Length: 116
Length: 117
Image (tube, rainbow over all chains, first blue to last red; front, side, top):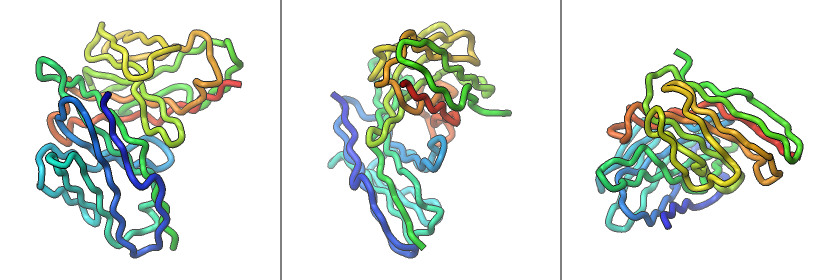
């Protein structure tokens, strides 16, 4: 059974702190790993990673994938109250024939709360 | 260009009632998905449709049916609602059948919050 596990499940920090969110996976045929941020409504896309060791960056957020050890981390530096959200990790699994139909298996999410 | 839209936004049902959640996208996407989100569970795939005219079960299909009415619309039906189906439901879509790049990732609708009493 394909499994994606995130840790911690919740995290409370103060503005300016740096946080590291973890995502580990056990899947049959990995194709890509994605990070989403979810505030009050729908998840919004942050990063897509397909190769090990290549760090993706967007401002204060960065993410790296380790395909050997089967995990990814999402780093947020100099956190702000606007970073408070649920962060979701998802894995795209490749099916027979090379397609995935875009199917994603999600982890439980990490609830990040940033206090002023 | 409204992206992915869902109706209704909120719904309260009694056990045993039926209802249909509607989803539409105006991005000419081929693949569409229905997820449910429960506290501490992330998003779980209910059904998906890789193309118009096809549907397949996801991780948690029991108690649900779907219809891919045309390329734009993908509806989710609860025939006999149960309290265990209380959840937030998200519809999503992608342009193809693979996530080729960061621009091909799933676009989500705003969600429907369903309560079954």
